[in-house]
Length: 229
Image (cartoon, rainbow, N blue to C red; front, side):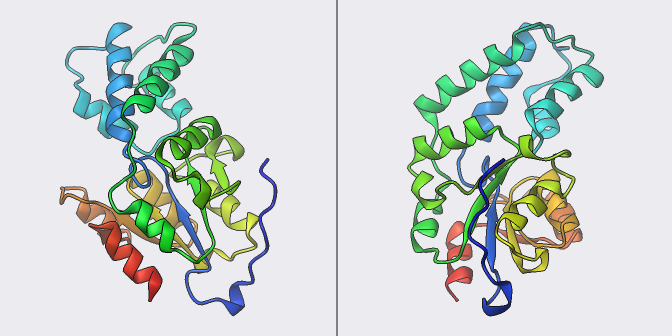
């Protein structure tokens, strides 16, 4: 379990007392890369040709790796071979080292952010650290990195966001979650937090985000301006 972060008094701070960032698709542009690798590896072990990359992307975005494996087994009918996880991770990390970039506007946003912040991601801690190191974002978060590995239930359950807030002594209603996926946004809303849904391109999913109470965010510069106000 991560060391407890400094206890920030919510009563003496303006909202938000804590900014909780998702990682993949929010801080780093990893989701297209990771989903492409996952799809290729599923094809290698017999994925039905009727299931294309777009469906895999839609099904897996925002979920923990273990949840993705369970979906592949229960919904796609695949028996993943022994060692599949290791092969998948090795190829994903190799492509990350070659291709991973931060989301546009994120480096400037974090450089100007004076409020307490952390990362709460469905990814494993190892992948979170690697992603932040490769993109130069690690110094903005230090040890304040939290993973679905550390809680009983991953997104869309609220456990991870509540766990992260507890490490700072922050009440849920004082926290702002920055997410890009429906499972992640759902987790933030269920945790009783405000959610900014990063959706750089309009899509059919925007209505679902708005219906649950998220504020849509097209550009990270807009979030930077909001948090500087």
